[in-house]
Length: 151
Image (cartoon, rainbow, N blue to C red; front, side, top):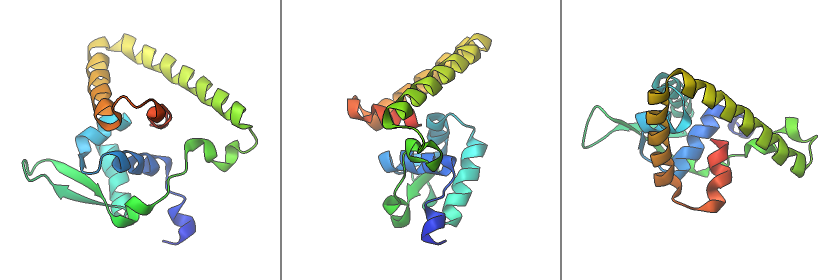
């Protein structure tokens, strides 16, 4: 994989690396919960990242059924470009990019409300678990709010 290919990871792969840079050695289950995707989708992303030597998967010493994901040196050294730096958005000013991000967040929030209406108990359970994991990852650090939005 050359330098150009390394910088062109899929958005999903970049999201995985971003989480692992915050909490290396996380379980696939927790990774799926944080990213808001299925475990099978996480495993698909991990297979590609492992094939390209960005991560390794190991079994937990405490419970061999639990698969932990750790960054390799290559994964730790990989620079993740923020979402707002994609070339397609270069036509927007920084102020417009921030406004665009706010609009996307409004749409996402509306979609979440629709999902919540369909199955409120399941939604609340997942939201609580995800919130607890984010607090564990980020603490109460305000400067990390941007990072939280990226995921």
